[in-house]
Length: 327
Image 1 (cartoon, one colour):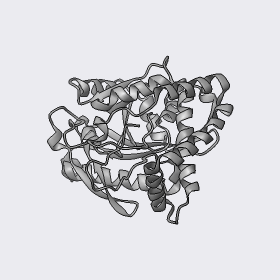
Image 2 (cartoon, one colour):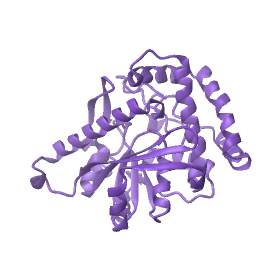
Image 3 (cartoon, rainbow, N blue to C red):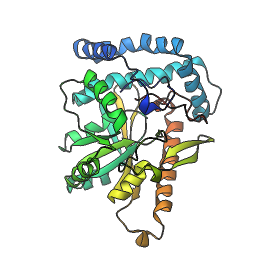
Image 4 (cartoon, helix red, strand yellow):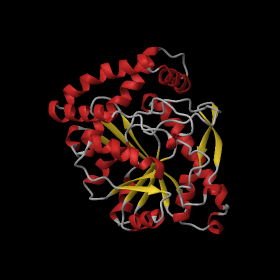
């Protein structure tokens, strides 16, 4: 999706679209015409260009990598980080066109997920801007399971435009949270056995609508949780949404392992189907437990695969105006 290597005052959902659709269309043309092997050669000058001209992204990358790697960082680390991101952007062209034969994809922890899908049970997935969400399509493709991406309403148009530039002939399913009828649409999608995924490692500005239902922004809370050695902001909106729908929540990530290799990870985060009385905890406590487990898993993946996390802004900033542009 669009490159998250800058930030704009006023919150990322209100920021102007910064992606260059012409460049994305050119990348798509190169990817389809020349093939993945040749297209990957173009990634080196692209990564070097952004490393040199975007000081803010470079500094944010080095600051994050210092935490994730646990050692002093060098410009070569930032280059590797940006190049990894560019590689996953290129591969989205092939994933969206369902050209899975070009990749070697392994699956860890997906047995329980596949069992529920085989029974016609929908699943809500919560991920992060780590690796490639599109790699998940490989899991659902052979099983005929539809996938929908959940997006906040203000950002849906921008992401759809970017994906359309990468794969104009591919039918994409999106559900814009905050719109009237969005909850009913999502409920039907899950009841019909579909997968619905959203990314939970970015917070909304305070004026944004609650992702679960319009007019409930006051119920969404931003919690400061320890992440890579320092408190950072995480919104409980995705987990309140799951609690409102009374569904199971599975953490998912499509880690890029270099070359043509991706590794899918699935870990159950929470099961909101049980009542509060059954679980022995009130709803807020259950939501916080799910959030803490989410952040713990994300931190572990950032340490394991540090170059896969694609938030090129100061994630630990205390200034409310510092939020990323859409990815």
